[in-house]
Image (cartoon, rainbow, N blue to C red; front, side):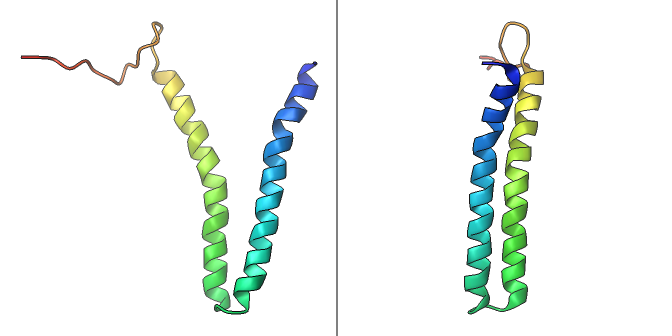
Length: 85
């Protein structure tokens, strides 16, 4: 399997999941708009979409920071051993 095919395969599932979430958000917005004020529905939708964008971003940043903090022997630099007195 070539590299281009693997990248296409890796990105296909998250894109499909995102499309389903956006469809669900659109449906919920239409449904809630009938019962709740437009401003509140828009605020909730904006917060939900922001969460969709920020959670993966924070995950990526956390993984990059975690990988940078690992030393050559696999132990974490940020973790100090407990000193017994």
